[in-house]
Amino acid sequence: GLKFGIGTDGLHQGLAQEACYISGLGAKNRDVLAGITINAARICGADKSTGSIAEGKAADFAVLEGNPFEALKKVTSVIQDGTIIF
Image 1 (cartoon, rainbow, N blue to C red):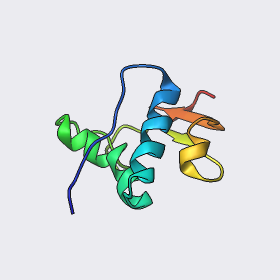
Image 2 (cartoon, rainbow, N blue to C red):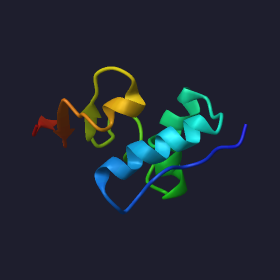
Image 3 (cartoon, rainbow, N blue to C red):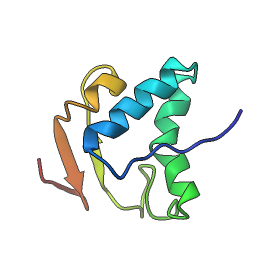
Image 4 (cartoon, helix red, strand yellow):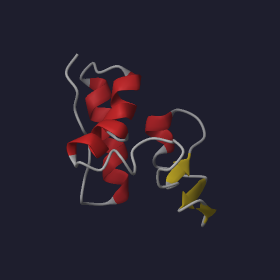
């Protein structure tokens, strides 16, 4: 039941590795995904504008294929402010 956020100011693939570590420690995949999205936004006080896909929020997200923890290392596209940039 503990809510946690996951983030890194290092290499982008560091986030994927942190997610894998936390999953390996027994966290449910759903909780790990929340940790890198909505929970991280809440901790930073930014959840009114980012952290989940909802009307009125920044449309910044990555599209992944496959196991999300492995796929974080292989992003297939990126949407920033509602525009596909990759």
